[in-house]
Image (cartoon, rainbow, N blue to C red):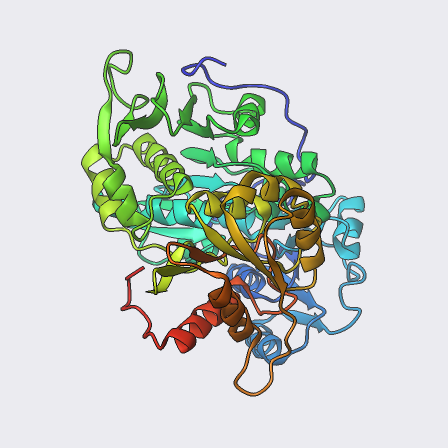
Length: 516
């Protein structure tokens, strides 16, 4: 691939094709009236989809196995607006009777779910809420999308990107898999100038007509293979982010898979491949020279010059005081997307300086006795935990949870030398313990399996054990490499519980808002 030649290559045909009824639906003022739609799921995205379709005169039936209080509240609203509801056990076991024009699915629903599989077999198009949002954009003057995906780093990068766009004076928001629901962003009464869109592999699977201004895939590592069926299909879903890109496909020079996905993508003529690297950038790349972030892609004389976008100190500020390699990579990816949209270098720098890190991403909780306590609960797979562990020299590692089919051997082997000890929690902690026994037998391992009783929680026990193992100069790092739902509501809940337990033990107060 040459950096200035548009990447092209074969791409499998979309698993969903339009019909005569759905083909004309390319903007919000198209003829949606009378469209017969099944909305699968009544969560946040399903509710928004049903609401938008009803407003445009579609005939909507909403199905969901859940029948809790929140579900019932949403159902009452949608029923008032004219929707039909089929809720409770068995409601999604088959496609409801009727001549359907379209199914709109919530992103987490797998393609082999019976209702969706039946729709596909019957030739009924299946869209996700991202596809629906794209189709409901204004007919003229619609805000361009800057899209990104990746196994890890998506939310940090998309919010960094939004900060850079705002620093350039643009009305923008981070939307999609984070922040503003994408339909809300598209239908907002005060239009945005540009939208920074984070896309998960699930959302990309159910999208096929997006045309982003610029797009990026940060990295690809094994994750969600239980949903996609294989790493190949997961990677293929990630690669959809590049389809139909207009200006620049941004890839990670350290991740060959992302570059290959660019090669395989079918893009608009003239679209460029732009890389980012933690080293000195080649032509048509962004990278680092000494402590300066440099752009050799979006400058006129890129063969002989570069634009200065900021410094590593700016990234350190953006990272809440921690200069982790993956944070630098995220900043460069965000900068590449911003520059593709014409954001000036000074706005990239100012966006980094004004950025507030998202919680549970290498968040410094407290320090006492020379030991630093860090919450990276968002590290829900080995790839994310690898990036987190790389940021520190000596670590008491808090790990475990739902493995989602992941292996921990490579992770433990790579970081055996920096592990002071490991404190393990969760359903699949045995898998982590076995990897430690194989690759780091010198590392003390403590299992915590304490039911919550009274004021004592699992995390209180974790913090107590970790405090007994840590030495001055160590970091106690919650980077579980696993999902959280076996013990917690979410990774955020897990991180909050960890931080609260640390503060209870140390008698520390929470940091002021915005301080990390």
